[in-house]
Image (cartoon, rainbow, N blue to C red):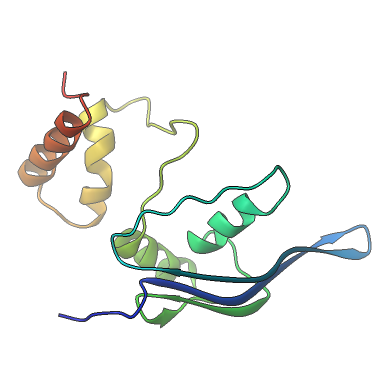
Length: 139
């Protein structure tokens, strides 16, 4: 079993956006450490960089300076395939809007990430129903 010092570690993360021939400095030296299983809330006023930070943590966007390690692996300029692999293996998302697949029922939506982890149909459907039951949505 591998034990990481921190599941997620950000060191001096900076992010800039180009705006009309200027650089907008959105993230200014963010340092963050999150242990495996730890629950974290990111709060701030509108425009403070919360979404930018979450996009970097979720490997949906890259950063300009600093170091981001996920489970001991440096995360920077990954291929789409590698980024998808790390998102699937280590990260989960709860979106503000539901983002459910309308052509699938609740159990199928919950089971979908397990499909990508190559869990068999019977097991993933059983797990999905257990998850739905835990949050009071089994019916």
